[in-house]
Amino acid sequence: MGLFSMIKRQLLKVIEWTGDCRETIAYRFVVPDRYAIMNKSQLTVREGQMAIFVQEGKVADVFGPGRYKLDDIKNVPILTALMSWKYAFETPYTGEVYFISTTQFTSQKWGTTNPVMMRDAEFGMIRIRAFGIYTFRVVEPAKFLRELLGTKSNFKTSDIVEQFKRLLITKLSDVIATSKIPALDLAANYNELSEMVQKSASVDFENYGIELSSLHIENISLPEEVEKTMDTRTSLGVLQGNMGAFTQYQAAQAIRDAAKNEGGGIAGAGVGLGAGVAMGKMFSDAMNSDAKVTNNNAGDSKGGFCSNCGAALPSDAKFCAGCGAKVSAGNVCECGAKLPAGAAFCPNCGKKK
Image 1 (tube, helix red, strand yellow):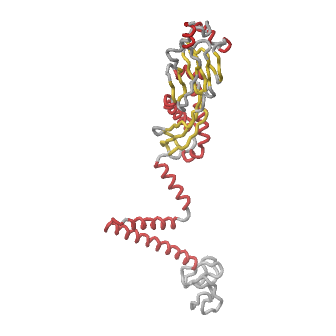
Image 2 (cartoon, rainbow, N blue to C red):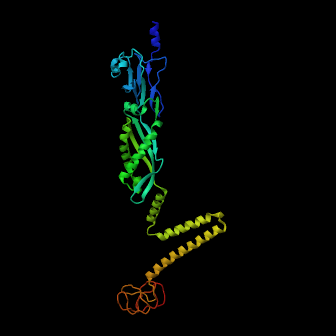
């Protein structure tokens, strides 16, 4: 009776893992020294977990979510096939029990530590940086234990994310190179690139018993020089056909910046004065240009315009050089208005003829 009480006292009744650490992927269950896993013990596996029994370095059995009584040989068909389990828990279990989390490990960050080289048809060889997030989970606990866990008592995301990050960067470089998407169009193809990288990297993740559930590219940044070139091209495209207004705007900006330079002293005043003179000249040139256009439209000679074709006539012309028509006394005034025959004054501007 005393021996029975001692065995009962040393019986480990419940085997379970209640850890709530979101970063723990695997946990080795610790059996207290004064306890033993024997017949009548119970195994509780919660949702999002898998339990693995290991005996003599081999995976003996894998249990999914549920509650198991380790007193029924039907509950452990693989365990009983091993020599050390021939007594069906009548002797203490001397192996190990691992709990594997099968939940999604979300918002895992990845990014380029160093720039990645890319050959672009328009800009040539350029360096890019990229970053984003991904999600993974364990789908094959036994393979995960063999390939990654080994004999570690705890396995966290920090033990593997660096390796995953390098893997993803390598896949990203290959995908960008094979896709041949121009650098200017990378931002418009984040979804397509993300899917391609995920598909390419999934095979490597599966080798560890892990599923790459999702991957997202949040940003791909180009070198500063390329971004400045893009901005310049955009500005020129917007201002195309109105360069005079753009020049005036630039001059006005220069004057404003010079005016803000209160500590510039004489040098600052000189800069401001120079900018002002330049600005005045620009406005003057623009106005003169407009005036020339108006004058060209109105005629550049005192002879007026041909009443037949409208070409400008020198003051002593007798025939129009444009159409050959004979120049009549009644022509067109310098302001562009037609003059009735014999008119002494222009009916539009009142100038004497």
